[in-house]
Length: 283
Image (cartoon, rainbow, N blue to C red; front, side, top):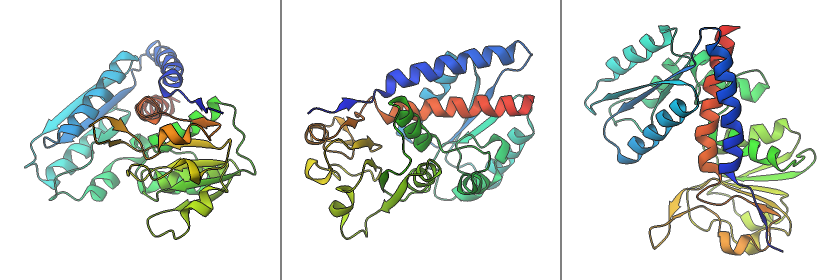
């Protein structure tokens, strides 16, 4: 049995078409959903991510502002820019691209963003809303993973989901989202002693540690759903995930590819969150 692919590009196109339609409805009322992206320094990967985010906004009817600053920018100046964007009614979402230069406290900057404009879902108020099941913004990568599970009509209630990774950006919020859908959730990480024993029990495995071949074919039960969040390079320099794709796809029921899986969903959910921020502001 070869697993069915969960195509992130195709799901993204459907979601982005919905974003464009809803953005047009807001524009008819005189409101253009706006995202401000702030980039400090010249990290090459960050520059690529930022360009993709800005272009995706423009392609789907959203207004996007890119603010680029030198790596020497002070923390105080960045906090002042964030506050100015908080007060700007034309901006509905604020994204400060990480990582920031070492002299700037990233957490302090994230907490300076208004929770109403926290479209990355990293603010402590957003984390608290997710934890308690209240309305808020969900972090884009795990939110995209949930949309992928929805796309195959997967019912999580009563299923055992294993999340490999405990980051604030993916692992922890992923576990909370799965829990909200009544899955039984196990979080694994670098100190987990019996990873294979746990993944073999899982109906769903989400691999999110940023390390190649964390999940291999002998670690999953037949028919399991495998979501690969990892972004790594193999020995030939090609993009690959955390999952041994060639091996695992012969055992799993569903699997996400890398590239073309979770990656496009992350930016798509940023657009969805920005649109929802604009809709809430307009309500």
